[in-house]
Length: 95
Image (cartoon, rainbow, N blue to C red):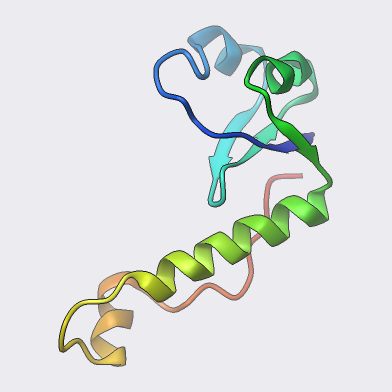
């Protein structure tokens, strides 16, 4: 498995063929887990290859930031947890 950071540009970013060829999954922070057979996809989308540790760190930081900024006026911390769950403290990308 390889990991990269790449911005999803919309239609054509990945194709049905890309998905059939090997694992391809998106995660917070524009992190993508890419099966070895899809290595060429990383270059095609101008992705920046990352180690598993780097990718996990970026994805977790993005998930935490997303949770932190998802607020509603006059919402208590308890209500926020009811609405979106607890703040992420770990994240494990597929290995």
